Length: 262
Image (cartoon, rainbow, N blue to C red; front, side, top):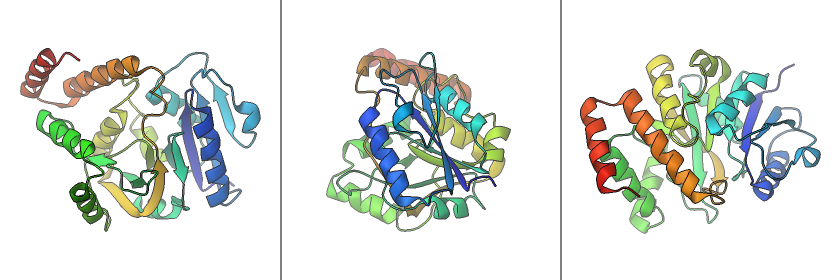
């Protein structure tokens, strides 16, 4: 019989985090209920021998998050895909509530917590000049009392944002394949927003499911090369605007980038 869930993790130079994720999966998920597919994007340290319980596929180069995730999804045997970053840790069995939400939603994401227990901003509006500015303000002040109060209010029940973060994102396998998976033109960043936008147009709303919880430590995989990460963010941002936004939004983005080259 196929497993209840296929967990897919893209690993790039975060060995300690990946091993911590492994321990948390074994702690909170029932053995035999899942398969874990790890796509190693040509990391310096091959962890295949340390993770014998996984389907471990090592790439000959860094394909980026979207392309590597698609390779993992192609190997999956479950009817549900759960994309989980290596810098996440399970703190409960969050699979059931997310699967339940997908009975009426196209994509589902859990409540994401910081390591100190505060709520992480793991959802948001589709990208535009104004929405990105607002999201940056919310992220900057995420741990301030008023922002945590706002997040607690939003996380008090299931609701439907435009997107949920790809750090922990569940989708039905048939929906993912019908969408053609992640758009591989995104190397890093915004592929989750793009997927949610396409799923919304095809398969119903995106669901934020606070009953499901996971912990996430941001940006561990990009700390080794922040300049490359910033470059890829800009490339993804520009590509998203060209793909989804109006000519006016694209003009405004070019003006913004000209005034803020860094």
